[in-house]
Image (cartoon, rainbow, N blue to C red; front, side):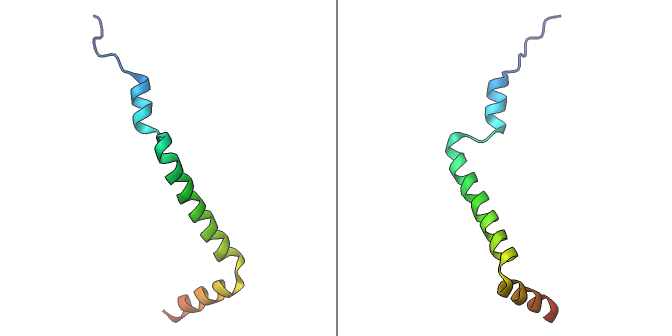
Length: 57
């Protein structure tokens, strides 16, 4: 029996992976996430403010 439904792997992987157009958006999102993490991690005053707000609740 011959399988008539051949899977187009190129079309499948193009549909699940990001396109070149979306790469800039993904990089910008990653940058914002990493930058925000660095600010919170390395800023003593922000950490104190966030911990004080968490204790007040």
